[in-house]
Amino acid sequence: MSLFRSFSDIRNLLKTFDFKALQKLSQKVDLNAVMGAVSRMSDEDLAKMMKMIQAGSGKPRKKPEVNGDFYGLEHTLTPEDREIQLKVREFMETEIRPIANEYWNKARFPMEIIPKMAALNISGLTYHGYGCPGKSALLEGFLAMEMARVDASISTFFGVHSGLAMGSIYLCGSEEQKQEWLPAMQRMELIGAFGLTEPEVGSAVAGGLTTTCKRDGNEWIINGQKKWIGNATFSDITIIWARDLDDDQVKGFIVRKENPGFKAEKMEDKMALRTVQNALITMTDCRVSESDRLQNAHSFKDTANVLRMTRAGVAWQAVGCGRGAYEAALKYTMERKQFGRPIAGFQLVQDLLVTMLGDLTAMQTMVYRLSQLQDGGYITDEHASLAKVFCTLRMRSIVDHARELFGGNGILLEYDIARFVADAEAIYSYEGTKEINSLIVGRAITGESAFV
Ligand SMILES: Cc1cc2nc3c(=O)[nH]c(=O)nc-3n(C[C@H](O)[C@H](O)[C@H](O)COP(=O)(O)OP(=O)(O)OC[C@H]3O[C@@H](n4cnc5c(N)ncnc54)[C@H](O)[C@@H]3O)c2cc1C
Image (cartoon, rainbow, N blue to C red; front, side):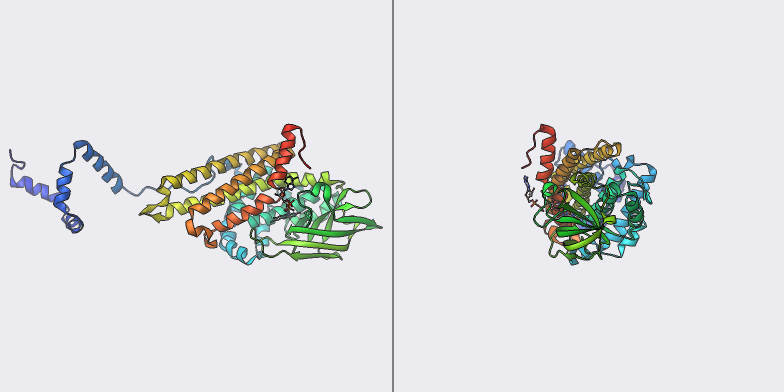
């Protein structure tokens, strides 16, 4: 029996052909050979082929949103707090991201952003009174994360000012000192720094400070050096921790930049957090009035109270740095094509992305709970130390994988990722190294102190 009963059958069939497409195709392939091969295919294979063709000819699939908050933790914030978080995100995206690499490269701090940051009204976020917002530690953590997600230097600048410097006055200052300093620092009209580490004493600060103070009438005389002090090249005040030659206890001082005998020199040639201005401070018979001694700082225990509060913030910073790197890498893999397709479509690439997301999600849920402990008043040194250790270790792994996914571009500053990799190294070491924080946790869980 003939396939076609009439010419009209043939005519109808020909009408369904796209002759232009056929002509184009004939220039690329042997049409007869293709027809022959297709006609020999089984019905099952033909059906599969049609499925593939139909899937390929559909509308391009919408790309998923790049979002490192996989479990939607930020949606648990109250609407008011969420608004603050988004305001900070917008500030970081519009004011900081465009200039971050330039300032990092030049190792300069963008002083012009301070008034804009002040307008966010987030300094001293968790403190009550003195013009401070009195918000939760959880929100503070989210904001540290938002800042570090774009630029860890800016988050460090802010953490030193709002956490370490304002926090020292808030926790250890007299009522008069709080009234004198906190409102202006909250408005960021005055900027603070925090000087604890010394050239020869880092991890061992608890028992080994060599900077000394001695009372002389209504004044104190401070001698010694402080190293790594963030913001101190331009800060209006620096909180200086020194050992009293008379009672051997650690005391804290609000040292004004114009105090005689106080000198802050910029530390050059850092390979991380280059935008942060770290200073080597030298105090030579530096005279500080008794009224500028922190009236409620009596021993290193009081210094440790400040560090406990801020160490949680550093764990959140590590989350931010990891999240920034993960999101940048995910976006890049969806755009970058090799072998004719986005590299995000390769199994080995997806394996790295999922490993990074798993780490990031574990970090986020850990610091979330840490902040809840802080807000409930249950936080201990070991809680904060465990989060610092875990999150900074995972951050290092995430930035490492992210850098890998960028190939050669991973070492170019313009892709941001090189900056994340370098900055992670500083976050890993400051506010207690991995070893010191591990010793704190180890002591808590075993009941045995392994400190030397
Ligand atoms: C970018 C940056 C910014 C900083 N900002 C400030 C600031 O604003 N204010 C401030 O006061 N400080 C600041 N610091 C200092 C920071 O807190 C110290 O660098 C940190 O505490 C480690 O001290 P260290 O560098 O002297 O290292 P060290 O104490 O010399 O440690 C070197 C190594 O020995 C290990 N180690 C030491 N003791 C032990 C032990 N008992 N058991 C096992 N291992 C041990 C450490 O873990 C580390 O691996 C900053 C540091 C950096 C890098």
